[in-house]
Image: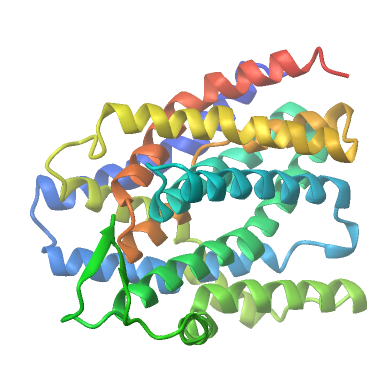
Length: 345
């Protein structure tokens, strides 16, 4: 049973994030330390240096031979359910949007597993819950964030491939033109950019080392680990700082408005857990594995998803609001999920 001491541990893990966010906000809005160009440089520093090393640091410590594969299968199926629903909406609905499908996928599926999930699930289910949420974090970094990078790069490539003098239709910020190079050329361009993206390297190299180290009982040299840690430790803090900067550059504190805020919270706290519950029942999860699967799907929005949204210019105001409000409202919702799921066997 989760107690007040456990709640305090979760709050203690979240408060420093808001300190970093307020420092970023104040450095632009109150103190005028950074210009807009410098703010863009800070976001790129986070996207291409601190976050990749942060991802690499926790990926190398997973044991891929001891993962709970039914749990992972349920996670994959839940994402496929959401992708199918969004694809159907984008294709068949007159209000369907490729760009909003990407953002909705991020809101439904990508969670802040390490910062909030680790202390919360450890308090609720002990080492067992901790182990599962770390596994979920690694799969998210390797598979789903890489997929998000792919579609964002493809969207950017499709936009850049359209000649300026060709009439186009604009769907949000996606540009579609009839004189665009074939689909396969865009795929090649996206593949090349992904191959050069440090976030991709972090996932591939990290999981490769995890397989090698656990297969032959090797340890990473301390000098290499020290080189990684000196930057990776700042990953979450600099991401929140960058978000504070982004907030300061907006005209309103809640940049996306109240309706989109409610919409993002419904996707995060209802649609995501519902899809995970369906997928978990499909693969036969039960007891604490089922409970952890549903609760971790309702964790607050991934900070990395905001950094990518900001870098690629796709609804960063929605993602920033989802991260900030998600960490405020999610704690009582997650505790409510925990209490209700105690009656599920």
